[in-house]
Length: 153
Image (tube, rainbow, N blue to C red; front, side, top):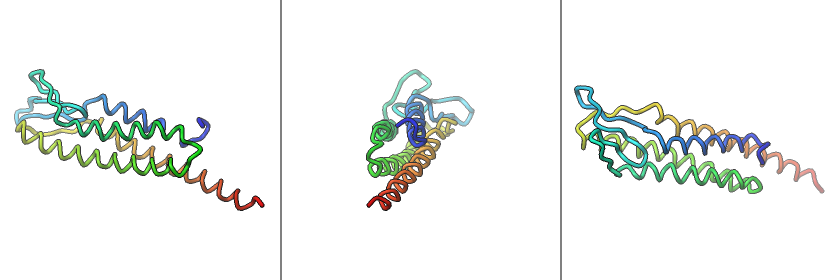
């Protein structure tokens, strides 16, 4: 299981999704440059210390791919299901970016502030890359098994 390179890619994608759930992915600033709040995946932390749970969908859109990626690591005998999970996780992470943009736009209007993304917002993109690499590795294994099946009588 662990000797396969796609398992390492899936593990890295899982770790990156979990890390992204825990860090700030953006900041809200006023025209004067004063920080109004920080955007996390589960809440918005305001400058006065309050938290608003409005962006909970960002957290869910990271929780589902991270959970499915973790379980797909142990599905090494079912390569077709692993490939489907990789594609589904990549679609969900692209959906995370769409939802991220929508929340940044909406919450920027609510706080009357400008939104600046954090460098941590690039973590799901790195996870998408690792999921794609895992998909390619799983596909290579599947093609190898199919080619060997043709040789058996």
